[in-house]
Image (cartoon, rainbow, N blue to C red; front, top):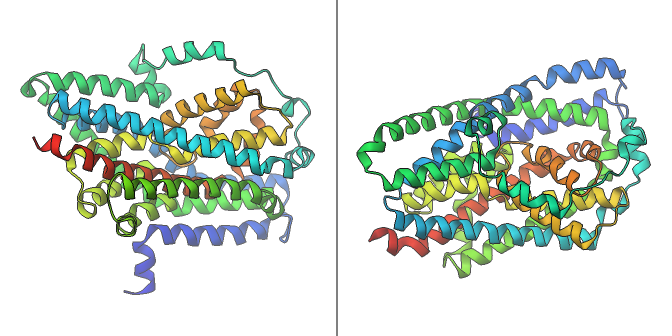
Length: 427
């Protein structure tokens, strides 16, 4: 196989090449070592380079709702009986909540001990982005009294409105209600709707796979814009924050190894080696949703997981099992709190944990979605959302890493429940 064919065959390699070329181009047009292009011309130049990224994200947003809805309904109805739904559904949901709480706990401990936000000066942030004092002013945060109302709104009063607004958690709840209702009805009465949903799932996955061809160009444009505007010095200054997040993600991977060894009763090295393809694709694309077809194939063909388990756990996990994202969100909040010299009380930390848990469940499985959802958590504890500007400058690498952890978590959960439910599902 020639080098050209090898590059064209491996998306992750195309993305790595795009990252490297984008870094050099960004440096060439930036102020640090390059020509120092004027701001207006630089903004115009990078706006054109960002077109592929905008198109890619628009395609993902276009199909994310029908894909998630159809996948969850099909997965639930494929179980066959309500008894199997109780066995698998409740168990998987509980498992995902526990694993997310573990990820959040790791984030709180590491962020508190290392305190990466104390290593940066907020005045540098203001100067780099020309921010006013009002923009970095600490605002009144979210209180515990607001949580009951927020939880009550999880059930969609108007499903169409939830679809239009992209409220992923509400869509997930609605899909589960529809799926469980279809499960108790005669098969022949729900078959027409099931056929439609299966067609919708196949169509959206085809669009998803097609859109992945844009990813290398999207990454190139994003990296050029980031490096040329922020500068290589600012990126180096964020090293402590990035290192803390990566360390936390590494701890989560170690937890998965223990689960595979002692709960799923599988060989750790053999199992992880078989996860290599979806892990590589998740790292290169930054999207567990885009990786889902490969994740399913790996679970069924390589890990030999029961298809009834994989077709439920993988789509369900892609939507709600966001351990890497939850860890990142908590660390990002602590980092910005330290940067803005905000003392987080016990109540604030509890609120962060609760909102991070809910936000990670409802985070769309697409590149960069964690940063978008993060703004909601920042408001809950009164941290100026303008701090997200700083996080975006290094988010691409962290997004790719945490997505790889998310996908690994889905496959680990599939291995666990394949062992737990094999006897029940075969009966």
